[in-house]
Length: 289
Image 1 (spheres, rainbow, N blue to C red):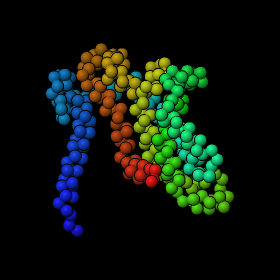
Image 2: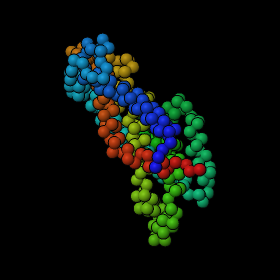
Image 3: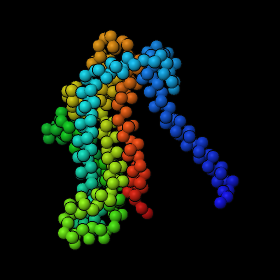
């Protein structure tokens, strides 16, 4: 089938634009990786671009032997896993309830959820609430206040609404309860949207630093993103986050790049395995006109 000239022009322009987006997206990542393996002098003089200069592993050795970094890393893993599990359980149950069109008060429940997308209690009321409930300095201070993303909730709700109602009716005839139907029928058919929501929540909790910065009072409870934030923001120097004076002098210029690489590496490793569910999960869960 022959294509028109206009369509061929569109393909060329579209390809050029997308390649430009890819280059703009990848350049900062490649530059950070190159800086993490470069020598101090080359970084300070601005000579590092897309390839390491003065190959250097001193900073990686210093960071990976630093007890504070690994303590914060462990905290991040724990917070992300617990918060993601809590968020998935609550979001899935809430979305499944909202997907029932014959539910009394359904409009009110949807309205309450949507209302929170645009209005919140504010920083100080939230802080007072978390403190009053005794959640400070615990994983629950991170997991519970951010347990339900309304965007994720609405995507899952739309997905559940698209499942054949006959399957749930057949399950009810076979004697399954509501939770049994959800666990044995609905969730096995929802792997795409579940994987997508897990990715959304996990990335959000992994990258979050302000909640921990607000509700954690002890340095051994901080996630690695706070560790990274202190380095990038210049709020602390290398010695104040656990490095010796000798190591701080040797790794001062690229310590931020090394920490960024080590912090983002798990997400970059996991993402390709979940990506195949991403498009189908969001598309199937989109609101259909």
